[in-house]
Amino acid sequence: MGKGIGIAALVIVIVSFVVPFIGNFVAYFALVIASIAALMGEKTFAIATTVIAFAKMFFMSPLLMASMYLPFSDSSAPLGAYSALILTVFFVALPIVCMLCRPAIRGIFRSIGIQIPAGGGIE
Image 1 (cartoon, rainbow, N blue to C red):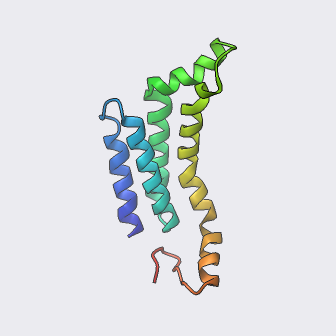
Image 2 (cartoon, rainbow, N blue to C red):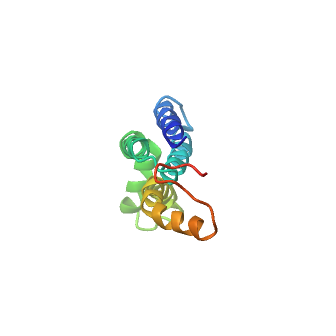
């Protein structure tokens, strides 16, 4: 089931390339789905989704580029100028953090009696 969710995340992040105006938010949604897949044990599609979303956000998003360079060009820029950058870094890091925290989460579930096999899924 984790592989299917990972494939869905990959398809959604590819669709975010062609969606005008809300493409970044579609990519954020794909990264949330990729983090769910990472928690289920899927690494390949979670990493691929994260890499593609990173490339889309940092190289193809004019809004994010403007929010990265605005604070450096204007010393009186408000803290909100960093909001798009902070949001993007958070969502790009989310699947990676989920992959790293999965063993600890498996231990928590095991302590309450829910067995999660190594391949993913809940039995």
